[in-house]
Length: 238
Ligand code: ADP
Ligand code: MG
Image 1 (cartoon, rainbow, N blue to C red):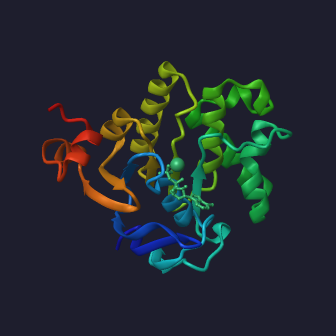
Image 2 (tube, rainbow, N blue to C red):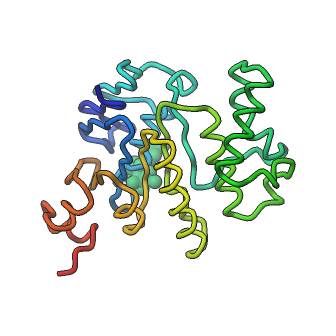
Image 3 (cartoon, rainbow, N blue to C red):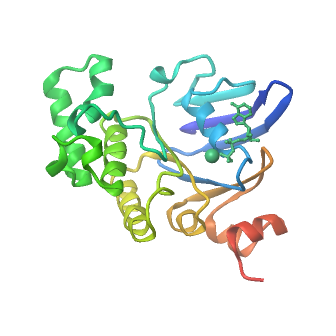
């Protein structure tokens, strides 16, 4: 059974169709990377999986259950945004605990999950700080920590590193790779960074204008691009 199935998934805004019948079977534990030009529908697809965007057609299944009509809170999925979306008035600890509190988890369980995630992400020293007192990389770790504590069935990332400077981007990319190796959680990761795609992905989905151009392992796309478009995106030298 796939962890997440997209079957003929479609999205229209008014009369504008932005996702045209997308089919993908995402395996359990897989790191799937979505790439494609700006405006091709990557964020829309991710937001539909998260439940932040209504599905216009087709079927979305998560862990064997059709979730088209389920709100985000009932999809057991955690999304990490580019702009972190941390609560500025809360400490790091409170930011990480918030989702679990809303769910009604008891305090010892919350504390232990926060401590565990803080340990994995090396943010224990900052637990009592506010987001404004952190660097960009630290904030990104907190945003990831907030996702980890929920122990979701899948993680969704929308260009999580694009606000960081080049050096930090490399560091966080390695961190994400390590994290995935350790947790083996199903992940859908949007990026426009070719190196991120090639190094993180089990498979890459190349999108163009709301349709999938090609899906495959990084080296397959690199060596056997189905079109010039894919070749340009994956960057095999011509
Ligand atoms: P990407 O993340 O690949 O850059 P998006 O998923 O953000 O692309 O956008 C896909 C298309 O949908 C774009 O043409 C964009 O303008 C359009 N779009 C996104 N959100 C809305 C919205 N709320 N209303 C109307 N059109 C939208
Ligand atoms: Mg986007």
